[in-house]
Image (tube, rainbow, N blue to C red; front, side):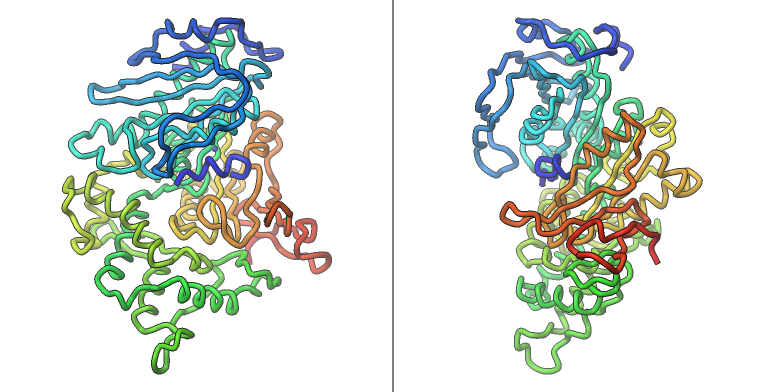
Length: 516
């Protein structure tokens, strides 16, 4: 799913680029008249510009069908220069990108926006949001069309493009286009993305530390293989045994029991787990004593719930694949798991690991985790904890993840942060450049029962441009246009603790403290 298109408000060869423009001091220039059309003649290494047109202010209709969700509706935009290009970093590459540049009131900065799932289309909604904030912005389809992994069959270079290369090549080209259009390179460059876009964010920090000054990585699919394996592992059980499935009513029953057992552990009963790692709830307490009357779980359903919470381990590598956190149960519907397995798991093993469209769920074994890692070799997974080159350049990274995420285990984010801290010499040193914000009650890139509306980009701008590291970020829960609750998001490993007085719906009543 393209989380960053919903979460931008919440929730991201430089030398040759600089040679194209003048200095970057002073107010950002407006583009000169007619300069957009002139960009058609701009040469791009390994690529070509295919469109350069001025778009007047008004209702812009993104082209094509996005993410399989149907045609796009017109969106209000300021006037901008729209440039499209095709990049071919390999003989089998076909990377489409677009770069949009505001005709007036450019903020002097560049923002690249990420994709979700298997990508296959440009993130137009996210581009429109960035444009509205004054940014020059770019997006890419990562080298293929359509939200399926079928592109990978017989096309290893396109897998590399999807894994990391397309995003980097887009960034280099976008900076060159922006510099030529404004006669000045961007003063700052930012990345924003959630889910697949969060994975892309981490690949940029790990592989291309010079591309961005600041990066927002939301709910990242860091362990893309682990996510796929866990989904297939659960779907394998539920597809083989209908009695093991958890329909929505049973998932709600389970969720209510989790809250009853663990909601008050943080000192506040509010329907949200501040720190699910403290919750030791066992679904076995709900097991039916007799017939299933709808108010209990069958033995098979208890086994499924335990499986979802549990970790898997690659038998050869010994590496752990994290289970989902307690509190995420509302995203466990039968249809949801089936769709998730098909999209995030089954296709990875079919089209990338085994290169066999007939590979089935029932073929999966834990040994396939290790096989998938051997095939990937770090192309898609974003698990390298050495971010020192990015930090040494002054780069800043804000990473967030919902504790109630039913798609990507939040433990992926906390364990990765801890590995980075080990490389950097501790949390204190790491927090000079990298802060992780875990969001209680938030589902995948948004939604859920907790406060899930926040502005990570504003926090990142303050950190990069003014040196103000985010000590807390205020999140809101908005229902029917009204703010019902605010809470602080605290930099991990801190959590928000109620001070004992004041409204529990007011973030001012909470302080950030170390986890107990």
